[in-house]
Image (cartoon, rainbow, N blue to C red; front, side, top):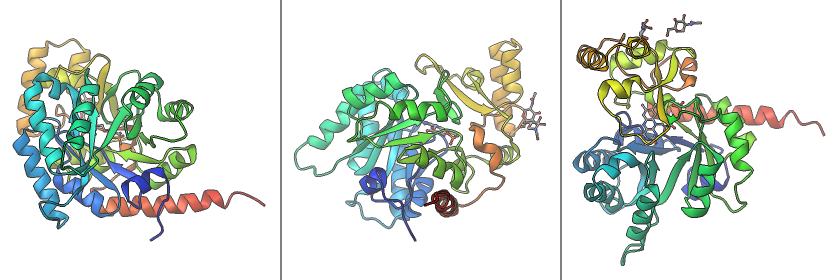
Length: 345
Ligand SMILES: Cc1cc2nc3c(=O)[nH]c(=O)nc-3n(C[C@H](O)[C@H](O)[C@H](O)COP(=O)(O)O)c2cc1C
Ligand SMILES: *[C@@H]1O[C@H](CO)[C@@H](O)[C@H](O)[C@H]1NC(C)=O
Ligand SMILES: CC(=O)N[C@H]1CO[C@H](CO)[C@@H](O)[C@@H]1O
């Protein structure tokens, strides 16, 4: 199999410049392990998990990858900054689970104090007897945020997250085709590698983002639509049926489920349904909350929460994670050769 050779794939030691995004409540050890086993790089979404829950997912990944207790784990763990910031002493426990498992990478997002967690990861790696570097992935949605990540925090991999993205992100994020060139214009020659996230579903998408100058891509929604994701049958059915007009950026579901500690300026892209309509129509939040909770127990598509990016329209089946990575790789290669064949000599 031919592979992609660039700063990102060389740094990670992988053939396919694709990352399966950390997805709170959706990506666990099986999804992460299968993505990495197929030649991409997978993340566990630690989001709302306890340290015991994170350890369970890491053990699943370790078993599926046939690795011993002391081997480096070729997957990452993604944390929500605001969850860590709720209780800094348990935050250390949450981070230590991943660090003591020697994961290859940690993803930090959506906090007011991200620099503090980056410093903690670096100090853990610097402790005596440890011979392991944990790569720091950081999503950004503006040039200002990119400059802080590059110069103040010296992150290892930068992720440009466009407004097309499923799940949480910055309400005022520009579309990817605007954000990526703007960030590339301020990116120093010596890195960090830049990845693109948001609305990407196909190998053609990946080829076009590589052509634009990124070193790889991050896909969430495409991996949500796999056998390994934690979404249930009703949610997966909704994803299969959804089109590009089905998603909206909203705070309705956070209001309904009571997750309101996100930093300023964040909302999330999800499939539009009655929960969104009720909030837009000014229905009392307590009533929306009760209805949402009932719907969640009954699997009622008219009100449940399904995060999804705009690229959801293009995917109409649930596949295994490995099949998704292989298909993306083969299609990406096909598009890249088509593009190079355009040049007349
Ligand atoms: C169900 C779901 C959960 C997500 N959870 C997280 C998370 O915990 N942390 C995070 O930084 N991003 C999270 N994201 C956003 C992803 O990191 C990524 O930026 C996004 O999925 C890319 O857009 P796409 O879904 O259109 O591929 C989530 C996305 C989805 C769809
Ligand atoms: C897209 O899906 C929405 C429901 O999510 C539906 O109302 C609309 O008709 C669909 N559009 C097309 C072109 O299929
Ligand atoms: C009011 C409204 O738009 N309801 C929609 C909620 O989502 C389901 C599943 O996608 C649709 O079938 C409803 O029409």
